Image 1: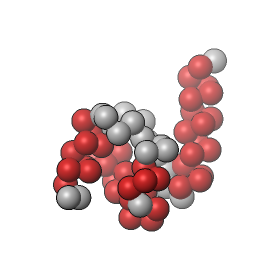
Image 2: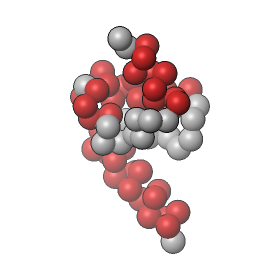
Image 3: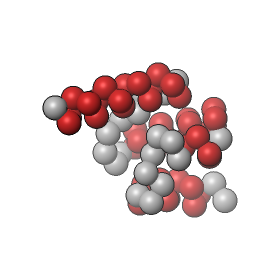
Image 4: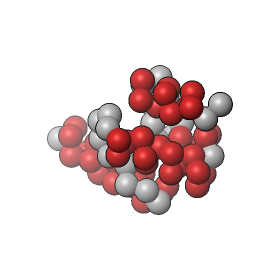
Length: 64
């Protein structure tokens, strides 16, 4: 039941930001994060990603 709710919310967030939000840590996740930053700015990323995760940390570090 929790997994179904997670997938539902992930789909909803994907619609809100206009980019598919993949699960896990992969090149697809990096691409999605960069697209969100490009379209909406770094602040919006905080509402759809866990900023303390290594993948997102490396993306944000590369933008400085």
